[in-house]
Image (cartoon, rainbow, N blue to C red; front, top):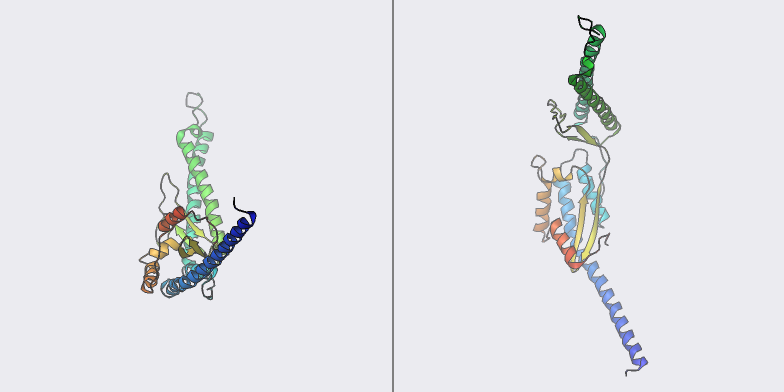
Length: 271
């Protein structure tokens, strides 16, 4: 049987090997991070050149993500009011006016029914007349009036939030868009809304098995729209092309998810 001293010597050798392996792995990760960060910086540099700037929220989110990931520090643009702010406010005011008119219309129709019942309580033969306020059409008018009243309240809240915000974004869901009449469906409610909260961006360096990635996430609600929109110049396409031109390899989320499953990587912030 091996002696206890021999076992201790083996344990010391194994502990030293593990410690050295951990030091080497840390050095590898640091070297990999330093190699990949300049490529990620190229992505953000290109975004700063080609991305549209209205409220600055889109570009600003990429800048925040870069700083969060430990890329070379860069100045962060301030959030500012949109050049279309006055136009958007007018559209939101129109939304309030529309629903207020709708509520008034249905209320006037209900009032006609109520006045008729009050003026004609009985038939010519003296029998009680069926009240028009008990008909299906009156109940329908009441439902439409109540819905319009709720929409007026909601539209008022949206308008108030917009007036109190400097860098809000307008989201038209088939309702009121500047320069166009409103469209409202029978079943699905269409409403023009805003996004006043500024979400910014976040970034990190991820070491997944032998692969090192820089993850940049634009958290602004319009990011996916602006990134690939032809009207906005498709800034994401240009930024990814720049990364490839410098020898980098942009990866899709699905590829990263597959790598995480294979390596058993645990989610969380990585250095």
